Length: 501
Ligand code: NAD
Image (cartoon, rainbow, N blue to C red; front, side, top):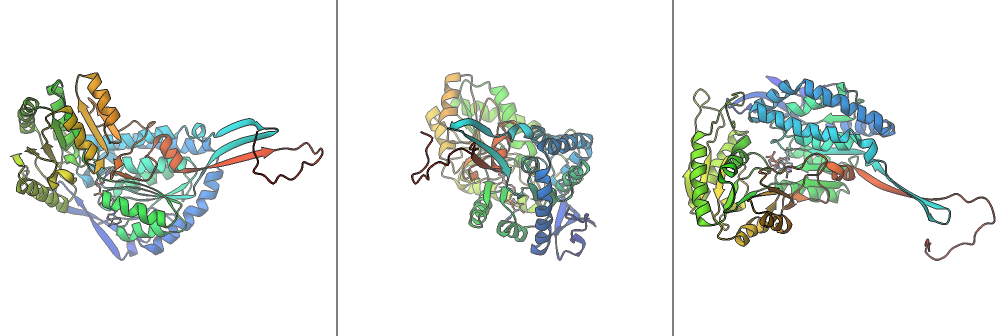
């Protein structure tokens, strides 16, 4: 059986062959174990941090233009390897190959943004802030950074993190999800091939044991985390306790508000892709539809039922398939349990995706599309994230009732409104308590030169991912106040706080 090893200095040796613990990596389309991943421990991390610390000194001393050139070459290599990377990604995650390309592309766009790192690190300068005094500030790297990433975007999210971190002069240790670890390793190999010195980007695999070792390690200055909310909160608290800078993105339950004046055909098309694409395993999926008014709700329901009827679920390499299997059998079970909970709580299960079997792939982790109507805010199936191909309709009587739903929800990652009314859209965007808003845009993941981040239990910490927020997270500001006396008469001692007045 194939062994997926760590990518650390000293070659792919990393000790994976001798690792005492391993995890199973499945092919979700067939349900078979296709590889084993080495699970690292404290001893491995100690070694990896030591080499990252050593590499960081010369990497930080490399001028930013040269660091950017590595990113330029990395971008070219990813583009050349796009097809094989996408197939590898799809084979472990289960998403269809074209969607896997999107996963890689959205990460690559952050790499492109980071190619302008010399410009972004320029700092600020004030000449003559006081008599003969100049003040300037610079952004310096933090040292060694670490990223802990979820299974659902095994290319994009690692690139969100390591591109700005290394561009800014940090070295980086990536701990990807142990469920689909191959693409993160490939990314690190390509980064090395692009000219990054050894130790600038290393990959260690592991589970909670490795995460805890990272959070407690005194040699790691900052941790970026993306995953589910309880773990994000835990990572945030434990990392901050250990004196680190931490950003920790969590789960989501995004709402689509559908106003009576919306273009219903376009809205349903958008909603289908956003609710069921990638089997609903996206933190920016739209699993809750909130039609405003009974008439809107009835039209929406009928159109969604018809669209579900045409949905094609297939293996990840089927070019006709709109979505593939979910990531593991455990996750499939969890989604089906949530569907049962929704039924038990009194929601109307209009389309039941449980028990879905794909001919020839009976052991695959497939879940058919499910639709609930008459879901209410008190139901736990509404309050919690399901992370599967399950769309819930929550009927609202008015715009005010509709805006309150995402505003009061424990998660605040993304939200979308579908309307032709600019005033309603503007009002909605201004008032809703959610971090990323789409106006007639179902999945408003911001472009690489803005930044990504939710509110409430969808993110812990101050800085968003990527864009200038990413650069700020991965750097610390140093401010220098300088004076160059001309050697004339010495000034008197000053015993009051200096002012420039
Ligand atoms: P997860 O929380 O199970 O795992 C995320 C990471 O944490 C993995 O690297 C995993 O190894 C590690 N981990 C797992 N259990 C741990 C524990 N007990 N202690 C310490 N570390 C642990 O998340 P997942 O299932 O891989 O990903 C799906 C989740 O990620 C969903 O909740 C989704 O909404 C969220 N997500 C959020 C964003 C965002 O930007 N807000 C983006 C993508 C995914």
